[in-house]
Image (cartoon, rainbow, N blue to C red; front, side, top):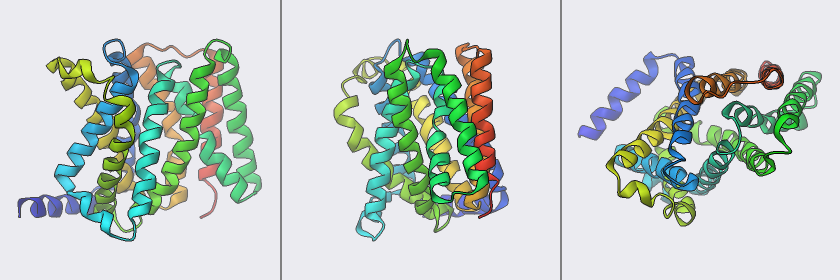
Length: 289
């Protein structure tokens, strides 16, 4: 009964708040949590922090939504796919930001969705968006590629996985906010299974330190619970083109948070590259449904 009341209150709040508010919350926490994670990398292995992030989200969503029952439904294979993508994406993202500035990784992340749109609908707008994004990524990679090739390998792998996340996330969200969050919880359980073999060993220092464990849990809530839940609430009520247009905020958010939290001062080439990616995302998202 208590859980049902919480869900009823949450559904009412979903309707009262505009979907753009959920997106803005997601935009901030999408990179704020990872910025805090970078600060943890000196004490906990990178994949260990990724495991703490996903484990926190899986536990919170499991207790809140009890999503395991969904694996008996027709949507289960979509959930398994989304969970595998989330697990791999988080690992690649953390391995990338441990080597590259947050703003650079955040900009590269959007090359995949823009390229997918351009290939699917070869309009002048989409081709211009792709050209701007490619030029922006070229600025970003030219600055640091020689010094951190592995970082760019993980960043581009994260880019491809992020594209799959957007596609599968919209499928999961299509039946409404509450159903989308339930399905997200189920996918997070799958993600936890995916990352446990590679991440739980690296997380062991946190198990011996309440402070580190608390920090890891905080990273998980900021990085996965808040932004992914907000994504589902936004995706369920925004047209895909509108959501895609709003994604243009994220590369700028990543750059600002990288500067404010990590003191990663962007160079003129960085600013040019991120700006071109933002233009590309905006052009792509401004197209017709």
